[in-house]
Structure formats: C-alpha cells, structure tokens
Image 1: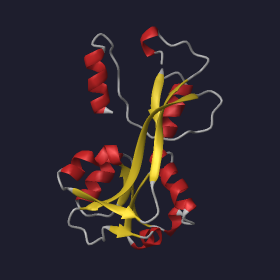
Image 2 (image 1 turned 60 degrees about the horizontal axis):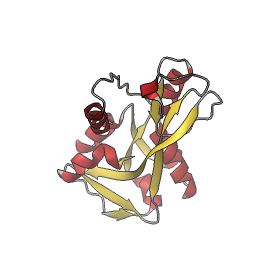
Image 3 (image 1 turned 30 degrees about the horizontal axis):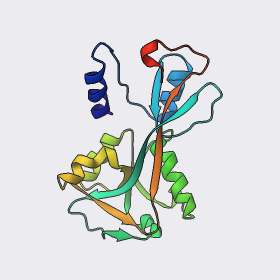
Image 4 (image 1 turned 90 degrees about the vertical axis):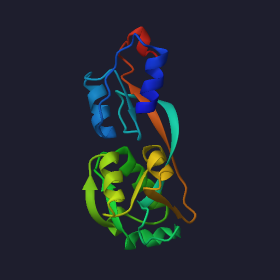
Length: 180
C-alpha cells in the first residue's frame, strides 16, 4: 500500500488521504459505520451494506527465516510439524489461509501455532528472528525476499492466489475524487 499511495499522491497531489491499518473485519466495520469512505481488504466479508470491487491480485506464500532448517519444498501435511505464526481472527489473510488449508483437508487447529500476531509487519519481523514460519502476502515480503532476510518455502500442489478489493457503502455518495 505505501508504494501505491506514493504513486497515487504523485498523480493527484491535491488529494489528501489517511492510511489506517486493520484487519478486513475492522475495515468493513469502519466503512459500514461511515468512519471511512473507502477501504481496501483482502477478504470478502458478507454484508449487504458493502460493495466490493476487485483491485489487485496477490499471492500468499510460506516464508521462513533465511537460516531456518526448513526444506525448500514441503507437502501441505508437513505444515503441521512447523512452528507457525498466525494472523488474528478477522484478518483477510487468516481467512484466506483457512480456505486454502481446507482444500488440502487441513485445519488451522492442526498447525503448531506458537504465536498469533496482529499485523503483517509483526509476522515478518517474527519470522526474521526465527520464531516460526508463516503464510503471508508476497507483496508484504518482497523486500525481505530480495535482501535474503527470509526465504520462500514452496508447498507442493498448492498455489494461494487472492484478490484485494476496494470497498465502499453503495448507498453513500462519494466525493468526486473518491469515485472508482
């Protein structure tokens, strides 16, 4: 988001905006309660008061600290043997992980969750210290992957693509510069 925000600001210098970080459920609630005009979320949360427009595609990947003793490729069932860092309930990333694991007949209850953390930044910083492995947005760890601070672990037969959505309240009129 920060790179997109910088690009947006360069294109529309007169538009002021605020970036709030929260899980998908919090952002949907803020838009529903008219606290935010629009939001970007990583999961569709059923609500008649919210409209969703596809925004950008992403991929969730499994990462470990660069020096971690984890093979480059694992079977999905092997996830249960690794110390796992998980996002909090309500997170779009967590909902996506639950959906992808269910397709492999796995449940998050089968994972050895050693910590539940409230942001992607907390996840990647904890992975870098060797606390555990996690599934996270490729966008969120691009720099760490390029700099060799974390490594991607492939999961055989599993690709985790997802969409981000721009959300708004369909019954609310947005100012001209917010219209999609």
